[in-house]
Image 1: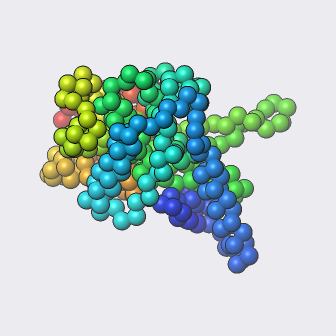
Image 2: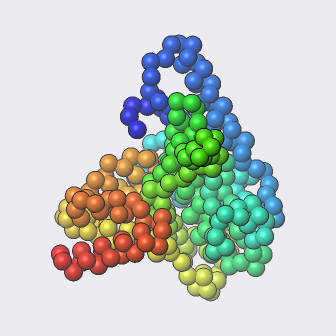
Image 3: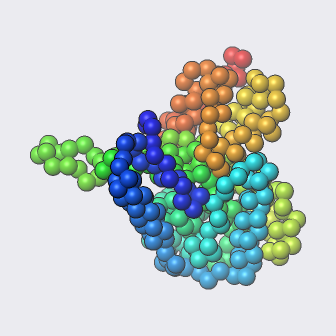
Length: 312
């Protein structure tokens, strides 16, 4: 992307093309940056379709998760973690209302964090297992704490956004044959599945570590927890395999590699991903970057892992 101007606001980063600016132009650009971030904030809603009023135990859960995530970040050496999302920007909604709000998401989606409104939305049935709700809420809260960066082009339009490892490229569609510009936007993704796996593994780690406290604070019985075993993304196994291979190659404990992966998601510093190709060879990084984009991309990762294990 070349040299950029970087602005940090409320724990998030916005970048613009690097150029020589007069003092007046610099002031104008800073105003545009502030306006963009205010737009992100204003996109968030205080209520959504089918919203359910939070129970006291859910308010406690959110506070506990904030505490656990921040403690994890501090232990990893993160120095500038964003402030917690206000509770009013964490929404629980009935399935019908949730899918009315997000018709493009799969019916199996349990929730999502929206970086363009800085809010969390969780799909919840009234009789839904509370341990499952906790897992979904924690997963999305980790997304919200991940490093976020918005990149603007020279015209001041958003052309990419980064959430943790996941990078979303945005560009206008190709021109129509009539010469009129296409209004559709072309969106590309990198590290989608990888980022989901790191998030899910971190959520599982926190839930396992604090299960006793959460069970007591939220009044969740052991039977209810047992009735809802955590369901992980399939990408998690691929990332665990990757961690094991890098640790073996570098003769270090797997926890060292795992901590680097978590730290990268929370800070946006990802130079350690070079270890993927140092360990597995040329092309491996691109393979894992595409994981989650399509069934074919996922199968390619699985085939690569099988072939590597056979030949090494």
